[in-house]
Structures are given as C-alpha cells and as structure tokens.
Image (spheres, helix red, strand yellow):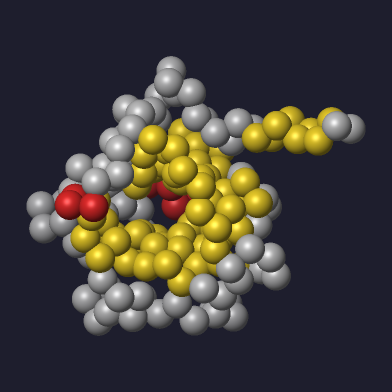
Length: 166
C-alpha cells in the first residue's frame, strides 16, 4: 500500500505535515529459519518512476547527514539494518506544501520505502545503538552537478537534530 498526501500523516513513524510528492510504501520482510528476504522496489510498483542506480551507505549512531536536494533525481530510500530519522523539508516556492516539514522513522522496526521528489530538502540521522545501512534506488545516475547542499545546522531550514523526549 502506498501513502501520499494527507494519508502520510496516518503512517506509523511519521510526524509533521505532509509534503507534496513524498510517498511511503510499507515493505515486506519474509523471515524463515535461514534468514530474511527484504523486498524494496520493483519496476511495476506504482511508486517507481525510473532507474538510474542503487547504492548503499551506512550511518553511525547520532551522526547527521544533512541537508541536500536534487534538481533532477527522485530518491527512493529504505533502511535494511538499524534505524534512522529522516527529515524532509519543502521550500519549493510554488508548492502547495511550502514550509512543511516531516520526520520519518524508518529501518528494521519500521520497514518502509520513502520516495523523496526533486527539489525537496532531506537528511537523516542514525538512531539507536548500531550503524544503519541505507539503500537508495535513484531515478538517475549520480551527477554531482545536480545536487545542492546546506550544513545540517543551517538557519534556512527550521529543524533541530537534537533528541526530542516527546
């Protein structure tokens, strides 16, 4: 099942106001006595747009990798090991959701795929006690000319990465 629009606010592990173009798909894990299969994305999924490359990165606990957006690339994130807090922020001037910010907790305890559209700021923080392994199935091959970055503590994005005891 794919969640988008206002329905995103009903998904477990999602906080904040929805952002136009962000979509979440609950993913399937198939465990047995030999191990576990983690499904992520197929070319006939409704959420799938195009294939450029898939890569994996890891992030250590309490480390922040933020902020960036892509001019041409759609991101499809999933976490197969560990947990992260992903934050997305919409500063697209013509967007209906301009100024909205979402926190999305994903990983082993909440196995989902998060689709991040072009020109939406995003970043993530490793949470928990182990590193997390993040997969991204992107719509184009990596091109450093189309990525834009800001420091994790920029004043341009109204977000504080510190732990929130809510």
